[in-house]
Length: 376
Image (tube, rainbow, N blue to C red; front, side, top):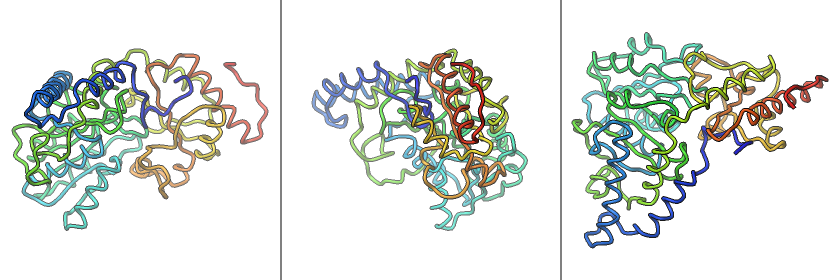
């Protein structure tokens, strides 16, 4: 892990999560919907996992549904919110994850009206623009709690108050927030939120969706039996068990933000932090590298054994500006020199200093500058 700095994209499974997955796969292999003893045993583990996760989040277990990951959770959550309302207008931040944006684009093609609210130059949702966008037909507001590119924590308290005044439903993507900040307060007032296991040391292909139990909505799949009819398909019980163990053991790791501070202090002036650092108390940092393409930085970093990215993996390879930077009014040129670094609790001070030294040296080599590097 000492050279892997792309933890916002995915994380390695923890030993505890791996152990839980193996044990559950061997001993709880039954279909949770089967009525025989093997199925009942698996069902008991699934419900214990649901109760445990609900306890960690401070929500009702009856509102939690296990899914294949954050993307499916966002899709199902947004569809549920839209079915619960009476209008045909959606509001979302312009920096939402691609899974939210794709759902909304589909609804636009079906005739829904959509408003995309920009971010400020600090990376925060423009609350004035959000309120001005509300109409009599508005049904749902969707704002992610933590931005996956620059780590900005959005003011969901204020957004919720605004939604409550106008009787609107609020969905939030918690995927980058869960395990990095305490989400329990936000979980207590949003109408739905999404989680993903592989961002916190759990397995890929597992996630969760919460929908406030008092909310009446119509599932998009008719007559399905799994997860109270919210989604079809046999539940990945070993994956769920592994997810819960990862969640229970990785929440609120201490010291990781100190590593981020150390890393930033070690960088040359060629690096500029994107957004307002006062609202970025998570182990993610977005950087503009003056005069050096982000792709070059990633390739050269990889050549030296370091893994980081040019933004969300779900956006990589697509043309144009990065949605987060675009939402902030930044240019395509800014997107071209953008990189994202994301940290892990297993990193040490030496790890982040060596990464900073590597990045500094890449800039020096690219520019042809001859400078004695510190930190080695």
